Image 1 (cartoon, rainbow over the protein chains, first blue to last red):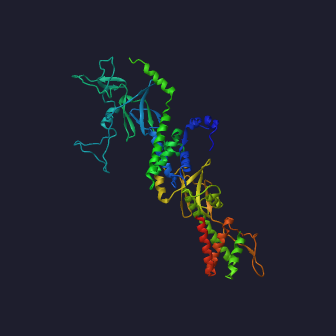
Image 2 (cartoon, each protein chain N blue to C red):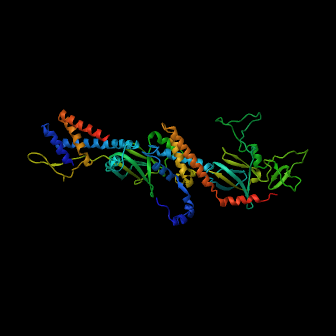
Image 3 (tube, helix red, strand yellow):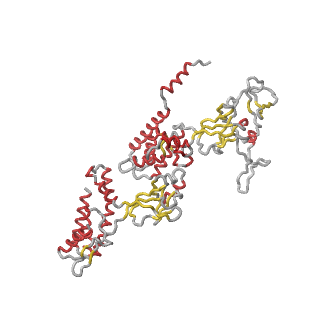
Length: 307
Length: 237
């Protein structure tokens, strides 16, 4: 297949969207990978023979998924407004998060993860604390647990940080941007530095598929940076791999097939494994793009005085 | 070639007045002999591939695999499959072996993978390997080809490249009032052998074998068998 023309590249040959082919030359499609593998690495004189295409496809996809988790460094971003449920539903292709930020006043503020529980599932109970069940024998749940309700209705205390205020470091309630404190009785010792941050905090409920925020995130804009597995929602024609990893993917498929095939000598499997690992290392170095021009700017920072 | 084969067969049979075979008998034996040799080509091809894999095959004119490929590819046909209903199609009536099915998505031809019935259900349920229009598949059941995904469901969407059976040879003749029937290659139903000329001796031997059995002449059968064994030994060297 011929490469696309400049016109097709820059203007998608007049079709929409105009940017469909921008940067496409960096990538090789899954279809090409499987096709090339079947042509070049599988056949009568090759290590792999009479292998079904769906097996090659499976291993190619698994290889691409693994690369997407770390080596590719292709981070997706999604901006959504957090409404009064203080929830951010994870994107449909979400696998793991990289950074979650609050976007406010033109500034991106990275948020810290609160490792303390800020949400829970609850069961309805009677006066004797016995769990209530429905006719099918399933426990009945309220819409919100108490801890969720407190967080959402902003009835949970949080720490107020303001050097200029006598209430600095004290626990209080933030409601519509105003802070309310209880009377201090006795002294208050210590500060939970983990959550002592002016910005809202979050905790990810992976099974529930949501990010739960602390109460002052309501109505704010959240930007989620995350990694996917590169499967493009199951659309095989859109799955691509950076060309720097092309050789690695072939080696990965070859190793995966040889490793699970009966009667292949161990030295051949080991050779394929070493080849795969070496190619992955090379590709990672290449994609890091370490070159003098880049290092120079970082190294200049070493002469800076830290006050 | 068919007339020459027949003449040789008759010459051998008549040499010691063993007997005579009629044109219709000859045509029957010729068909069987050609089918037998045609099928042998695929086994011989596989044998040559195995030899090549263990570096026992030469290159250039010593590349026997190439000449076998040429003979087999003579029978290659590419044709559109007839759509039956939903995602099912009818295979060609004269196919010996379906080499590949191609899905035409309007812009590109995509090769469809042959999948067994023991795998297709699991494949369809698999997120990673379910057949789709980029990687289509098919199954074969009786005289029906089922394409996957089920969106492949229209006439002209599936092409088939296959190897057909050779056409039935037919030695046609004009009836003479007295004596031998005379060969007529202009008859509408005339059909020569489709195997290469180099197969003429093999065809003669095969037909002799059938003819020998027919006229209950053990010596002819023995002669044919010996010739055949000799050929096989030569080819497998």
